Length: 247
Ligand code: V4E
Image 1 (cartoon, rainbow, N blue to C red):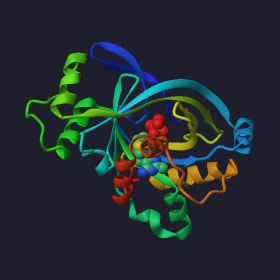
Image 2 (cartoon, protein in one colour; image 1 turned 180 degrees about the vertical axis):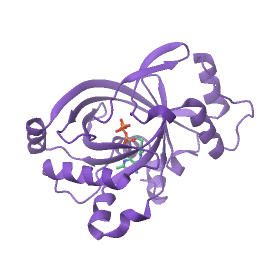
Image 3 (cartoon, rainbow, N blue to C red; image 1 turned 90 degrees about the vertical axis):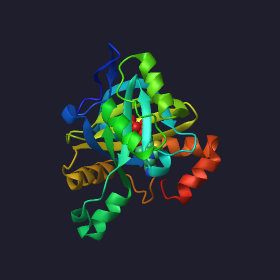
Image 4 (cartoon, helix red, strand yellow; image 1 turned 120 degrees about the vertical axis):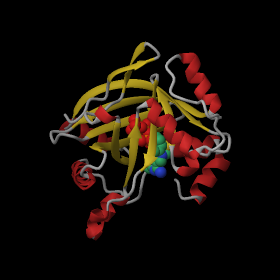
């Protein structure tokens, strides 16, 4: 298996579990992911050809400025199980666009840089949010954590709980997650983690092979949990993200 989903995360003197990849030495990797709608047939196939590697529940809190300075730049700051993660857009590698077939597979996928190192997250956030107090630096305690959020004017705009079942196939390096969110949406994800600057093309090919094994035929991108959450709970912001081509 390419990566484990759970590791130990030290935060404010406390040890908690976090998602990580084998590329987490620099705490930066690229997540390439294709979402899919999981029908009864897909589930049956997955249970036949895959191995269930775990079931867990987590609560996500997403943060942004009141004017949505992060998400309008396609940056997603989240706290999950006590650990911070920032997902940022990554540039497309030109070598991927060599054939129509390849770019069709790529169009069904998203790719985001995942940053899990808190000082690095704070730096990135600071770069895009201008009205920040100068002394907002890395913090360790719970109290200081609250203070960096308020110094950067960050508030929680979305939170929900997900029940996740994870599967792997014989071909290594691919994880399939089936997510059920507490606001009544379920979605599947085929996911490959690549070291930053690594081979995204081979990740896309792995995802395409996995989709074929599962019998997925859709040629449209499937909505993620956040899309559905925002459409229901923050329709104005959702419309703005659509207009700005973020979602
Ligand atoms: C990147 C992003 C968001 C952050 C949540 O990302 P996602 O991978 O959907 O969540 P989840 O819970 O599966 O995280 P994981 O456990 O895999 O790390 S919210 C919106 N986006 C952008 C986005 C997009 N533009 N299009 C699609 C289909 N998904 C996400």
